Length: 175
Image (cartoon, rainbow, N blue to C red):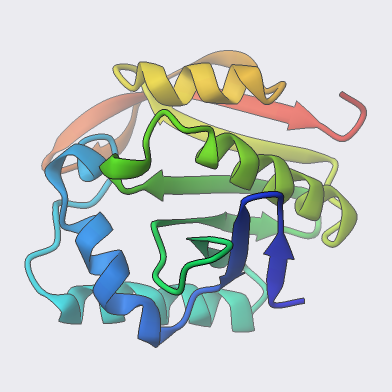
C-alpha cells in the first residue's frame, strides 16, 4: 500500500518529486530545531534524504510518507518508521510538519493513521518515539495519542555536535 487516507490528509510514499516541498520543511530552523539534522541548505540534500528513506523501504527496515492535505499536491511534512524490527515486532516513528500547519491537528491525524498502519500492516506490538527533552509540543502530541512516557535516555544521541538527552515514549498494541 503506497497511500494512507485520513479525513483531511493523504500519506503517500515519499518520492523524489517531493524534494522541493520537503526541502522547504527540512530547511526551516523551527522545524529542524528538535531534529537530529541541521537545516538543509539545498534541494540536493532533500533528494539524498528521500533516497535514504526509499532504501529503508526497499530493505523493509523503515519507511516514510509525505503528508499532503487531501486536495493538495505538495507535501506539508513527512512521517514514518525510522526503523522496523520484525524480530521483536517493534518500530520507531519520526515526523515533522511545516510551521504554517502547526496547531491544526494535522500531525495528530497523520500519526493516528501511521500507528494504526504499524499495528495492522507490520503486526507491530510496540511503537516507540524518542523526543528531545525540550520538545514539549511533541511530548504533548504523543501523550494525546496514547503513548506512555517511559523514561529519560541520558546523552543518548549526538545531535549537531552535542550529546543530548531523549525521552522514550511507547504505545503497545494492547493499549
